[in-house]
Image 1 (spheres, rainbow, N blue to C red):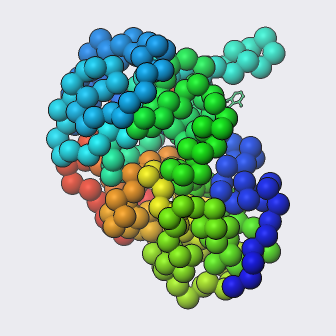
Image 2 (tube, rainbow, N blue to C red; image 1 turned 30 degrees about the vertical axis):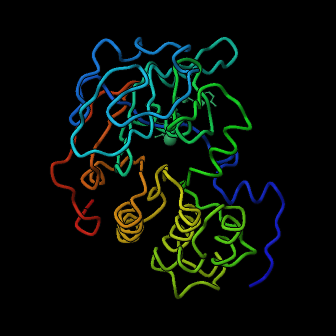
Length: 308
Ligand SMILES: Nc1ncnc2c1ncn2[C@@H]1O[C@H](COP(=O)(O)OP(=O)(O)OP(=O)(O)O)[C@@H](O)[C@H]1O
Ligand SMILES: [Mg+2]
């Protein structure tokens, strides 16, 4: 294998986190959510910035706010976000991308985030992934407080814990599939081998292909292999099938489904495609910067059975 050398800018792009990727995330757990019993008055208001500054690993069943939660099925509470507000100032005009979003995500869950364009999905996902920070509210990943905008902490958090997949694959054209994945595994603490990651997404026979020699769906699967090769705790996907036709999109969804099922990687997927929600454990619908509704699928559909 070649020694893979790239510039810092390329490496950042390879990890899917360049400014060009756009930014904005997802997720909110309304106070009364299936599987997440009401947190009542503790929603946004129950957690002050002072609370957020206390560190300590979250215990399963106990929110940072002190509220007991008895969700079914176990799973460590991985993310707790409370009262997220994201404000952008464009000259005289203030844009409120998030208007008070509460969101919980537990280990191993597969959550789909739906909502119209501009509803705040990417803003929420980017905050969960440490690409952006809220204007108000707090967000915690295990014992990491992600709200304070500490660049060093966020950089380490992204590197050690988060895999990103975006609509446009951001592969480096001059590197093969294997080398694109190797860029990330070279930096990770306990990565899988690039070949293993590519095998997991069904590309064991495409290791030495360059991006220009791969279909769009194959390129997206290389991007997924790159995201999961470092064994991230959470896989965050912003419209991963947005640029693909149905058949190819399903193959990409099958790869994401497999990662969630076999590696247990906590997964959040943004999509405009409501049919994809059938794959999720839980579906969160955003509207105008708020969580409009949330539901849980009693039975999850297999990606291959989804039609749109
Ligand atoms: N950097 C920014 N500066 C100003 N406004 C922004 C910025 N990023 C997002 N916004 C605004 O915040 C709102 C939410 O944006 P976001 O990208 O989260 O929406 P989205 O739900 O992901 O939409 P889409 O489905 O089109 O990707 C939009 O009105 C958007 O214009
Ligand atoms: Mg978006």
